[in-house]
Length: 143
Ligand SMILES: [Zn+2]
Image 1 (tube, rainbow, N blue to C red):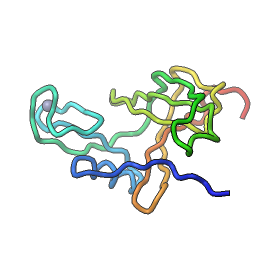
Image 2: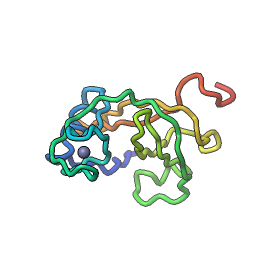
Image 3: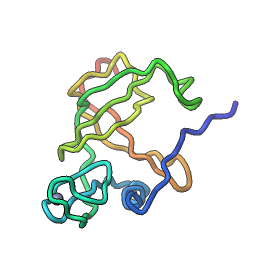
Image 4: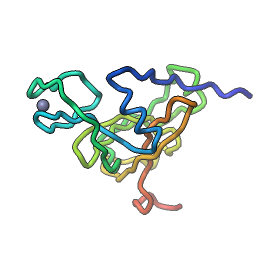
């Protein structure tokens, strides 16, 4: 059986720093040098103060499930044997929100507010994906 590869991001000049950090096992978020605001996804210009200067700031990768949906339809063959699966918006401690397909999570166990932590999945030679999992010790029943 051949495993279908998931579609992968193609790093650009704007996003290369994010992917390079992920390959090192670090989660970084773009931060405005002018007003110190975090922003994700990366953008060339700060939407607040219009500064073009930004840097990569390492964050803890801890947060909570802010919201989620359960996908019952696959829109790409990679996900066809994974439905139903959770697509979650994670709110990091730093206030930034990121989206993840939590394909290893039982949809029956997900709840808004559950604590999560980042982990890194090296899916190809070039790309390591920051992914999220429920923090050990969180109340999930069982396990
Ligand atoms: Zn700014």
